Image 1: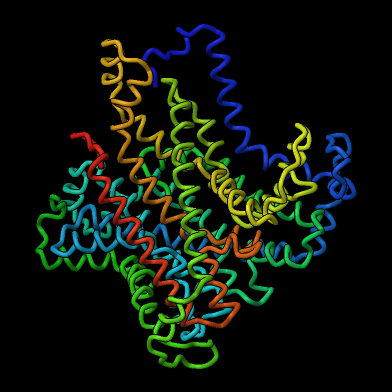
Image 2: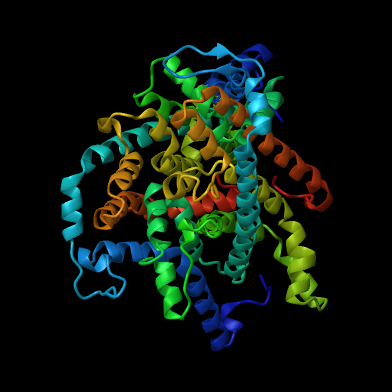
Length: 282
Length: 301
């Protein structure tokens, strides 16, 4: 933040100290994950002894192979993936449609409805838990995927807000001429707004995917049958049964983080841009 | 706001608006607004899921007034929020200032800071169980190295909540990104002019940077406070509220009442209390904000 801080004008020692500072501050964020990975690759006897030092010498995949046989991981992966993808698709669609309408279709009630939209941020998940459970049991949807998909898929105030802000930065002339060419609001949304909103779409899609993939409370309440279990619920129930059997727990934890790391690796640019550009995160 | 689709009548404009916002409005109504109202109704009822609900009147309110565990829960939730929210915001700011120190801002380090917040779920929570393990855990092994005897963390009444707060701090990276965005919006001329006038780094931070990022600070305090009253996974997985209820927080207490103890009606009342607490805290934060949050004329928000 210092105006004069241009690397080329700084002496070498200052640049070194700065780089070191960055690395040292990054360590606590990355080290637990690296440690988890390292632990999961240790021979299992080493995990139960405080004296055995962790070593890079005898890494093994044995824990992974054993854990893979113990749990129906592919099915949990499939469930998690299906739920997350459907939630994400719905969420992106509902939020972007609403954001588009709030940005471009002034209507006497839109200010009020936008206020209502923002106020839903103040409703904590814990306080809607019981009524929603009552609602979904009344509909007979408990033990189906619907209660874990629908609430995500119909959008989220944060994302509606992000899309509205993003669409407002687009030049209005585009939409004026689109209308002259015979576009109605829906076709203007489809053919003009959406193709131009790729960064916002990417950010929201990834946030929604991560939120749905990491969700634990809803699958815990609604998905009772083991064949419906997502990775998060499966992993948690596994912990209950095999609490001391860390050599199973570690590899499964790593495996369930792996897809997230992949998504994050590919998409971190959009996430970081999404947050830094709009000043919010969900 | 200027209308885009000028030639259309107001009626058609309104119809398009409602059509496009319909999915979200249904979601907002059914998953956010109605449930709060329904919680209000349910809190006057008794309900054990296979049976239909029955009216009980004020019973739950009376129970709540004398429920010692509820007060304990409220205190725990307050301690958790007070311990994690300001610390997360401050840590987020420090890291953002560090990254923003360079004109050519690194993209790599913000991503690393943000990684834990992005991936935190059941797997990372279980990882913490092992990190805080009294005998084999990373933390205590490290403490032994430097000759200290670490506490039993999650199994120790006094250390369980601090451990939970440490876990929350691991996700401070999302605050870093919000601050980074705010810092990058500060016009460089302002800081350069101040330095030319002889201002020190601290003075620039205090008189220029801090006021200009105050909207981000307000946002982070509000959002993180609401968020801290929603945290469920670590409390459920790591401690189940123990030892001796020292980590029993509101969302977990609601869950236990509803799904472990079959007290749906009472849980609905607790849900309403949770909403009121969050609502009041948010209102206070916005109220106080008038005094210290500074909006620059050409701010985008």
